[in-house]
Length: 557
Image (cartoon, rainbow, N blue to C red; front, top):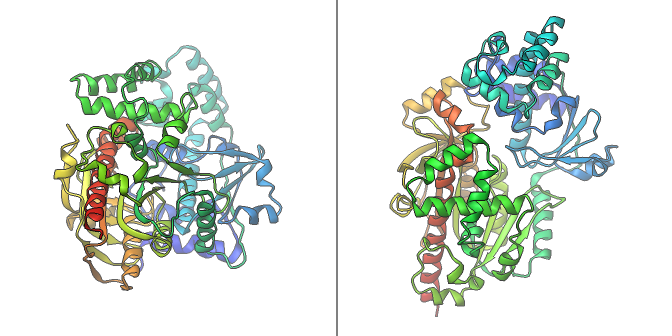
């Protein structure tokens, strides 16, 4: 018997395949029937500000001007179908790495990298529309417009006692969260919501013989052509994470410029500045270094500083903005790294041995859902992989934001398999780089089909069975590894005992807590809640890679 989540997924995929088109209003009942743990009360008139905020942060700012979202796994197919997307404005979102193009009228084109991408954007759009229209229904009467203007002029928005908070029947914390979406102009935002209901349509553009692997193969050929290193013959350490924290730890970029932190703090919002001052109050050297590395990345992203010279000196290659597959990569040649530029928390014995290394570290941006399977399958096929290290965000059923989870069991809802494996990460090689973050090993995690595609009944079941975190990528990664070793089961318990040649490590850091209201609110307060986790995971990963590489070179004839 199928559950409401699977029924909903099957319903909108059937519509897409049959009609190539979905009116979001038509699938709202199925969405509400899921009883999503992140979008509770979807079918009632109660406003779920957390769900609205979650969806808004994963959509471009222009979304309220859009009527139709065009989706395709092939950008050129959109052009061939009469949508000149390369003439449109490229727009991005804060919470998803997804290429989108806006025609500055009513069309938005979105690039889909996998089936999980389709599931994700449809459920996010549905969530956003449902909650927007609920707010609209509260604000749409003509007399409300004059109230908005009057109360804005009286500067009551930041008091937490604003009558619109009462009108929307939301808590003080939800009102503060709602204000974060207003870009400093709550009057305009409320007027916009009150002026129109949303009625989104999804249109899918198909490509003949469409499949994710063909796009990935083209992406790989493009990467090989742009890379000066032999990706097919060099030993490879594969890392799935963000593509900034590890490079920042090995290039020594402004490693002693603490003035950068002062500048960053001065330009941060009050709540961020206060939180960071608290974190740095005890002069913990590791916290200072973490923030410094983050500042370096932040200012490089904004164009204020450039990593290019430092990365060039270290032989690091970045590969971004492929037209075939929306996946960024970073390649680090171990031989070209200089010990005096590597963060001092990374312990390298016999560092001179690494000068004889022919190995590469290939880092890819943590993918979404089922794309993880196709990416790792391709890397295992094309490269000589001697280590796989995966770390990324997860939701927790019982821990705090920022905690680090080291699983040894993964229940994969994509394949129905329960994977059990030896994890090369351990609490001991991570905990030494944390001061307040809990590190838990030998844990159980669930891989779900989408952040919104899980309901509270399922979460209670997972909780009662001892599962600790939920995320979207571990199952597909483990399936790819199992297939590489010739294991292709379904609905089974699968033991993956890797050999001595291949390291496999998997860790999650907690970014949200769907069962804990307080922790969920903390997850919206900022990146600084997981800053220590990200760098502790990055340092532990580099320590594992360098140790294995030194041992490998020492055993070479």
